[in-house]
Image 1 (spheres, helix red, strand yellow):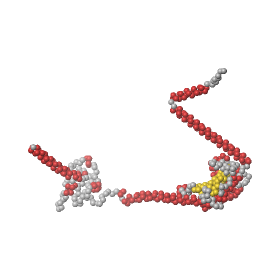
Image 2 (cartoon, rainbow, N blue to C red):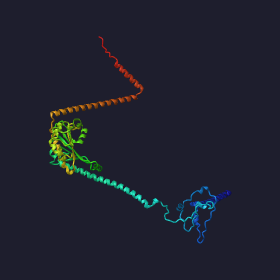
Image 3 (tube, rainbow, N blue to C red):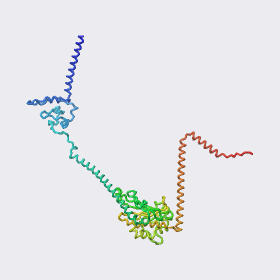
Length: 478
């Protein structure tokens, strides 16, 4: 029992000694590796005041150097000065760690002598000078970039402001033109008020005269007159509310136009196909309008030495008789004569009368004029007066027997051609359908197997043989 107690005591003493040894060793290791250098020790060993500073000990080196380090350039001294921490001015400078300190001067001749490094000067911010960091030089491109961005923004904002201002001003200009026309020709005691009983789009007296369908499209409706069921006027003005369209109009000059559609009664209008327009527009109308292309032709001039329209205008008519009856002395004196056209016919574009129009209304009178500005609406008074004049003239006009026979033959021929066109269209549709059906059957047969095709061919042969056999009639014996 006493032996076991003594052995336990020896073990405890041994463990205590080992613990003390471990603590001493760990403290020594921590003191050696803290900071990875011996700067702290050097700071503690400062020289005592009054003693002389001894020069640093001379380090002895071998005369031969390592070839791997002899060709390396000396390190940059400026980087060492920046990276090394500032030392107190009373301490001696540390010996340089350049490789030239370890070289033998007798061994290597002709090398430049290195001057002793000056102690680094203490500055507040020791940073290498970068030319790009110069505020005077860097401010110029920054100012130009900022000015460019401001220029783009100013241009965009200015364009938006101009677009907005132009929208409202252009809208107002178009409305003023439309209202000026209505005030001149659709108010009380005006031309349309004297010739039509109902003006405007409504039934009441307070109904608006104009119907606005867009910023540049206005419509006017009138009814209540003999020989016709109604009149529709459409004003198509320039897109003044659109800034881009306004700029385009400065390059390509546009104009404001007004067109009139007069819907004639069926019994009031005879077989008439007639057009009068400026020469360039007349050629285009004859190519585009189907009734003019089929029934009418361009007339060369008057017959019998009578007065005729000015040379700027061209007449397209179904016969010379119809043209001579519709171009009367009155219209020549008022608008289409030599003297009157220069003064009152500047806004005339075309007029087209036909009983073969496409659409729901077959018999129509079409007029197209150019609109003047809002202050000069009176210049087109004689042009507007042509509308009621020709409504009455066409309503009372009757063809002669010779002209009627000619128009009847032309219309019957046109009806036959139209019927042939319909038949050809039907035949083409049937052929197309048959071709599609045949193609579908071929595609279906191609998908079938060879056995099914063989059975089908055998069935077809049996059907053909059955059809080819003579028929035998069975009779009962008496």
